[in-house]
Image (cartoon, rainbow, N blue to C red; front, side, top):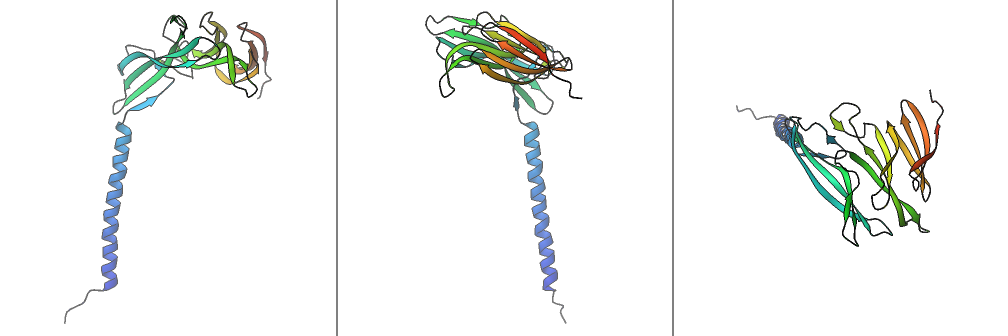
Length: 229
């Protein structure tokens, strides 16, 4: 007498078979995604490799970024961007960071570089001046910057982890002046008038607050904040 297969047993074997196929497919998809992620080009900003002899550095190229109006003036501000590619073994990392600025006079088509050499990292560039009733800048009186000048933590890169400076210039880019050096950590800045900002920062293990008169390009008052430990 023939033995008829148990329908429940057949269904269970079918479920296990189909589940195995789905699991293999899922594992293959995950492996593909991991491979694609690990081998793709990666892009970062605010990082400049400082060692030109670094064996991982594949390319080093300067270019101009987009220009923007400096409100109420005949000037345009354009970033000078350093694009670098470095080899990380199984992927390529690209870094595109601002290393200087070009200020263009639209009236006579003349232009100047903000600083003589393209060897700093500019993290921030802000305009200051007169705002309208809605808080929109209508007349720029100058610009202020946050920049990194040197590799102070010896990791062969300029990044936000290095010591920073705050500097100020005219709207034309002239009279570039460093007003606060050696900032370990910039905590925040606040606009307190058309031509002054309040800066809170850490330096040499202590916290400070400084008022900067941007028009005069100088710090007019600095106080150490109370210890927090």
